Length: 261
Image (tube, rainbow, N blue to C red; front, top):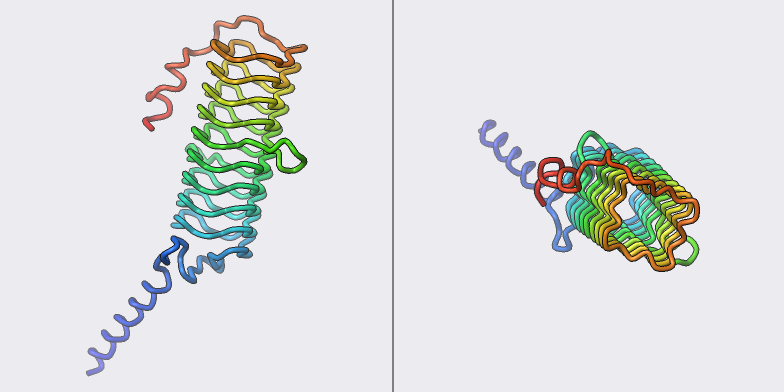
């Protein structure tokens, strides 16, 4: 009898756990609590340990995730609208199709030995000042700013070396002093972007739209500008000496280095 009761209790406990952690219809986990962090809009999860957590489709609008450890977390389709991710650790996290519009990613670390997947993410108006985005995959991501006040996406001083930003929308985005060495910005829209003092050495800007962009004092050694629209761009002081030390675009951005799409 006692054995039967014990089994019944275990079964009930398992069912209750499954219900508590099961995703609701909207995609966000119902009452999911991970190491003290309740997954809900406006959650207060500062410095929370969410490493490797399954947060796919989670609603974390306006959440406080300052300094949170989200390395390797699954944040695909997550709603992080105006969430505060200042100083958060997001290396190797999967943020594909996530809504990061207006989010604060100041000083966030998106590099943990493996690239962070930011393909197709909405980063309009996000503040990425000083963010570490080394080798991040930002293909088709929308980083465009409205061009007004704090709504301008900022990547000022960000580390974007080898980042994949093909087709990225960076209208009026602040990239002043950013390190874009060897990044792939093919077909990117950089209209009125601030690239002053940026390092664009060996950067692929093939067919990019640089209309009215500010490229003063930028380093463009070895940059591929074939087919780029430079109408109205300010190139005062820009360094454009031909440089043969860059690897061919096919070698840097092909399957051998970054893998397949």
